[in-house]
Length: 460
Ligand SMILES: [Zn+2]
Image (cartoon, rainbow, N blue to C red; front, side, top):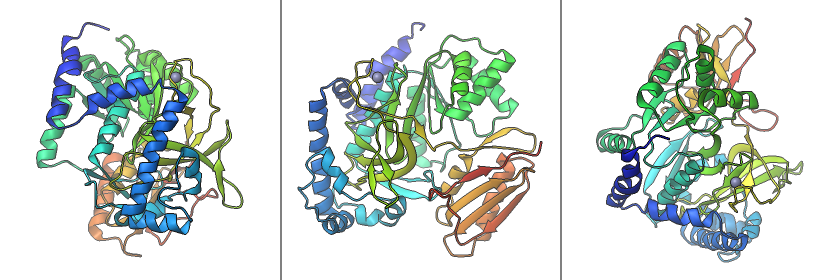
């Protein structure tokens, strides 16, 4: 790595100062996380049990939803004493989470951040969290990225989508300052035409990023383009990917294009980083100081039990630091594989899980055959949360697109909403004819999931 005085100053002086100006203890938390990631199992269990007791007690006393749910389950405010006791608390299904945002919001502490997420089922969900939770999220994310070699102060190229909602006024200024200070470079990776991929390579050659972060499949497509055109002119650039699976063949393409430092992360808008890969590249270390990840198997009776090592199950997350609007045993809609408790060669004591499955979004094609990210439609429908409840996109074998929409007002999709959808599809899926079907419900898969994007095998 070349000597980088600005990066060093940024990481050690400027960013800590900026975080302190904003009243954020990110750096102190990061230092403490770097210690607890090697703490004994007993110390970690004690830490989590304490935070969990506080969360359940608070949720019981200060939210209508959890008071009702816990009382109905025969659980008092002090009955959940350890992580094992958590199994007695009913899970929070996504539909319930959507319907109970106000009932789960406590009068204290204040909500510091509110955001909307489309999640993996395509139903928008409002997420509120406290300042404390935000600080833990930030610190946890920086720790996990750090395992992959991406540290604060580094210049990173981010391959993400178009912004879900255009920031305005002060938010825009703050974002610009943040990005400038952090030297982040953003590339829209949704449509991977040759021109767009070429522009991303130009950005890498011009900006010389010290890390690349983004959607797994976007990074894989970029890597294949770099390899096919023989464009690699750089040493190893650490790659931190998430949101989708990177298959073994993708991983070798990415390693060829950017070097062997390829790291999986698992996060979501509801909770940020839930797990990250270390240099042992064998599963994801759980962010245990910030949340509890459970992997649960639904039996035929409907009962949920913990997955056995090697078994795949549904991910349930308990957010330990968000007292403003608690999430306890929230089913994220993702599937992950449970692992036996075994020490990791890296020396960190945080338990591991993964790989994470079920986050694969199909890649669509525009009329010229360019790959277009399925996640694109999540972004569209985030903007339309007030008009639509659910959606499903099907790309037929002849490339026609069928978009099924369940509007908020049954049977009625307002003309301006339809116009927005058509404009969006025309822009991102150039030359593809679109049929919109307004429906009352969308058929779930046999596993009870809503498959958001379906791509039928192409004719040619
Ligand atoms: Zn490890």
